[in-house]
Amino acid sequence: DAGVIQSPRHEVTEMGQEVTLRCKPISGHNSLFWYRQTMMRGLELLIYFNNNVPIDDSGMPEDRFSAKMPNASFSTLKIQPSEPRDSAVYFCASSQGYSNEKLFFGSGTQLSVL
Amino acid sequence: TQLLEQSPQFLSIQEGENLTVYCNSSSVFSSLQWYRQEPGEGPVLLVTVVTGGEVKKLKRLTFQFGDARKDSSLHITAAQPGDTGLYLCAGGTGRRALTFGSGTRLQVQP
Image (cartoon, rainbow over all chains, first blue to last red; front, side, top):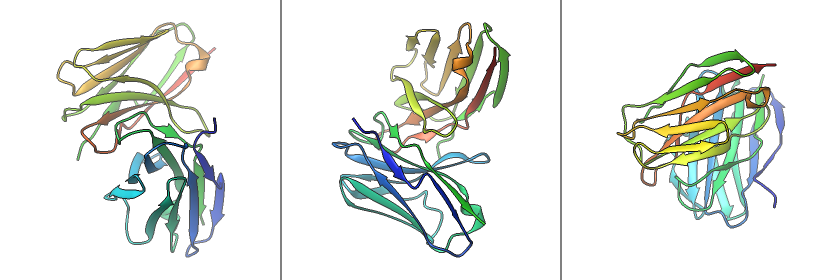
């Protein structure tokens, strides 16, 4: 079975540009999570969806960040405009039930904003 | 805000040594998970503990959940180079998303 699929694996962009990260969760999973990982702050939750509905977006840094889940098999995380401090690895994860179930992570998107 | 602190942050040991990693919080969690992350990949779940005082073993890895469900430890016996990675604890409460610890980066030298 395919795991969580994220694209792109690497993204290099210039400050001010729009960045869109994509995620396909495991089929049948009800919850989807976006995390950001940096050396300084570790793994931080940005937002999580349950049955395509955003449940907790308190970790979204500011209005420049937005996330959507138009259907059960696809989610996007958009940053507009991007800034150098957004450079990080962004992970998408999914789980079968609610938020405390086993999380399956994608391989991440390494984002560099110059 | 629920915080999970892990110690040590970094650990470099020789193959065959034993080690213990700690995960501490002032908050009570209904469950605690341990993940291992290798470079260029996402974290992978090792174990979930849900009962205070619970001990689980996974080959050479022993996991314990504190009696008060605020802390946990991971003990590795006779570490091997394949154990190298970033170890993350993560606490869960109700329907809130998991809170991840700061991580322990382990390097096992052959």
